[in-house]
Image 1 (spheres, rainbow, N blue to C red):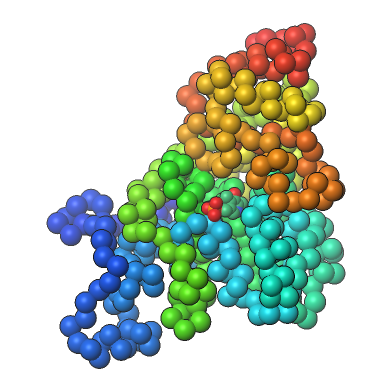
Image 2: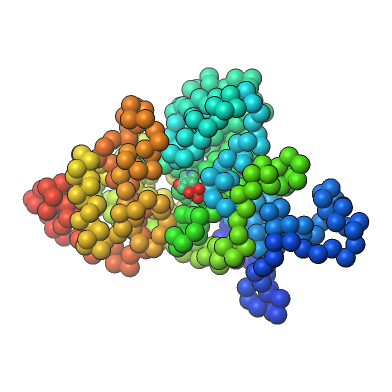
Length: 406
Ligand SMILES: *Cc1c(COP(=O)(O)O)cnc(C)c1O
């Protein structure tokens, strides 16, 4: 199955005001109206193509939204000032006080903290379940449940959700399936598999230059408009609006996403295969040893591979820290959170991006102290990277020097 998302993004043509090959950037917070009546109608949501105020929408944000809708194959998309801005808006739009969410237990730390802690203010409860066990998901659904929430490929353990099966389940109970696809843009197309709402942190692969935070919600036109509603829209009223300058720069970067994703996947597959052969505990959905390998294969758009994230468990936090510091010194990547950069980024999720999750729960979900998450970069010579990383591991006793140096 290939939804041709990259082609759709590339087919979009937006010309600038003077025939420029890129659209003009909207540099205004507010817009004039020729008649007072049109202004009134726009407030009432009855005019197409009129801009009111840039928190509501702006030309630059609409261009980026259209590209994201093309990418995910949804009717429409709204952009946000961050991934969390998108996630919190979707959740608050779908839930009333006292409602309930069924969520995967292995999700981004910020999303987990939002559901587990913040939503308590509104008596909204979340059941965190192993999303790969469909019967557990179904058993957790109550009459108050307003959504099933998961990540297509989860952070940081790279669990793979069976989106088709979850979508069927969600339909059975007439609730939306919300999928955060931040880890697998192009590789997996959740909406094509039946997801109702697809969320992205654009901060990661989609922008790919680690220079800003941004987010998106790809969904039906009806839901996207409801988020923007001046009276009731969580997007409009929480106000996490993306700036037009950033929207314009992200749109330019999205056009090379397909090339970058292929290279990220190719390099990660190379390292994952070789380090597993060396005897390390590698987690990568592209490996046969990964419990979600078959599920990923069934859902993927093949040409984009298995993505740019992998984890290696080096046994202890001390070893993980020493290795990350050494790799940084050798210029093999940066000790930094986030992902999707041209340079490899690594961090120990237990003490960083997933530190919101209590230690006991981290253990239950298999998040160990020695786990390093790698977002593999666009290295031109991945074999040289492999050799240099291996050298660090041998120096630190993570790999024995009996391991053959190829
Ligand atoms: C980073 C991330 C987020 C949050 O996005 P921000 O842009 O940092 O707000 C949400 N989900 C996943 C899977 C992420 O990796």
